[in-house]
Image (cartoon, rainbow, N blue to C red; front, side, top):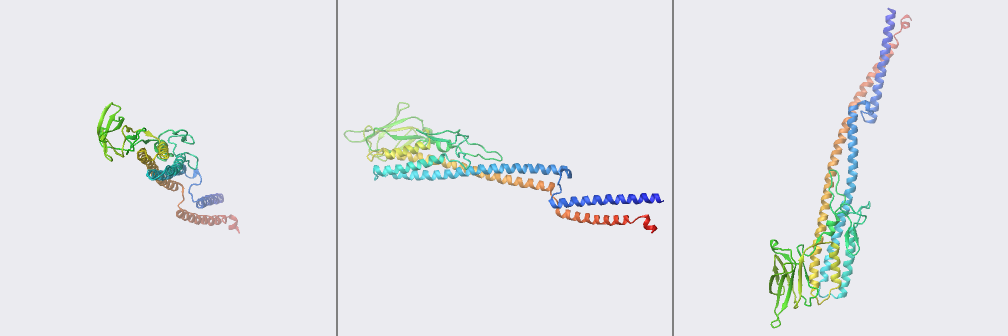
Length: 401
């Protein structure tokens, strides 16, 4: 009996010690979890949940990196959009000065001053075309270019690769196509150009012309030649299709009247002299700076008696308007890219919030439940301590004494 009693006492003592150790370890684990706010402090705590939390954390970090890149791209496009706005303002000022230069009351000196102002605006517009962002990246490099996309030697040229980059699901185009914004400006009215002959002696001028019937257009070159009847003084004109070598139209010239042929119409004013001509040619593509340079040269070299200046100004205003349209289109594209960047940012923010919630569900501690569990474990530990103290008193010497 005494051997069995000793064995029972030893077993009870060992079980009590083991129970105390387990409960103490549970209290320590709960305390660590409550301190960190995580129910997983080591991968071994819950390998599956730990892996889920790690995947979510990796994706959150990737989204954060994408957002930093997107923010940089958005800042570049925002700078480009602002630069285009400044360029359009400069173009509008240039246009207003060109209109004022057409006044018949101005002297060559007055027009020289206007030409100086126009030159200053032209240089500002050119400087804008080579603007860079805060990182030194050209704003209008297209698909890639040197540090300065536009060079200005005898003529402005685009040294980049024309084209507009396409953004992805998490990125937008970081630059705009300078070729499309500054170089592809149609000459004349976009369909044909009109110019008075360089050897004209009269003072007739012509507007930029309009298209009356697109289906009748031929794309040929034409010359309008004027003749004056020596007896009556009546003025007539003959329109020659110089490409086909045929007569396209003829009639009596009327000051302020329209001359129409092959789907085109233009209005002439003034008094043409015998032998004066007007030359019509298909529109081509030119750069914006050539348009500005020609307008400056025409105004600087204009003579009051010639009818060339009104024609040149009419042509310049039409091409300036075309150039402004190109710039406005580029600015609209920049606005679309900025809107796209905002949508991507919102989408990434939503995805990041979802992943954060997934990570939290996988590893975060339910603090209310943790406090309840800790209190329960603490009560159990205290009960185990009391039981252990009672077991320690169970000794044969206690009964002998």
